Image (tube, rainbow, N blue to C red; front, top):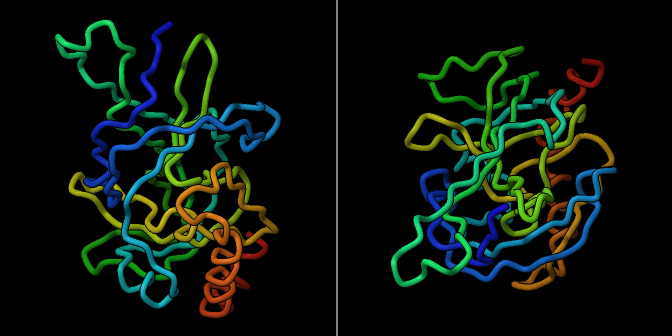
Length: 222
């Protein structure tokens, strides 16, 4: 099994509405994928951050209430590795890019481009800044800025932006996906000012629920 160099080199998440910086990956143990007890690896990244819901809404191309019936481990996980150069031929292979394609079912469209054909009950795939990697015959979860993947069976308000390939990806990391269930955001790394992440998320979530109160009520029994 290949050894993975613990450096994120160049991420094409800039094409997916994420501009990731070079960073050392930190290893943390967390049961953030349920009973699978998958170790979590956290990377740091630069991205366009919003702390007000109205600014987040304005920046998003698509805002929906949606759900998924897919377990995280069963989704399409994309990991791209850098080609080893001559000088570093003996070094472990480095990760160049990673993400997960998550299948969702749209329950309610809250904002949509005029040219889009996004309708209720539409099934589509969105991109999340998280994936699974294989190292030493073990699965590990790799996540940008503590991003928590969308959980199976829960309803979410999702703020999405379309990339150059036509795919929609979650923006604003954890503060671009808001579960309508009782949810605990898991923070695997406290570096880069993450101490207040849960408080920030809950404040934004309250604004989301206030703005879309009637729409959320409509999908409760779906």
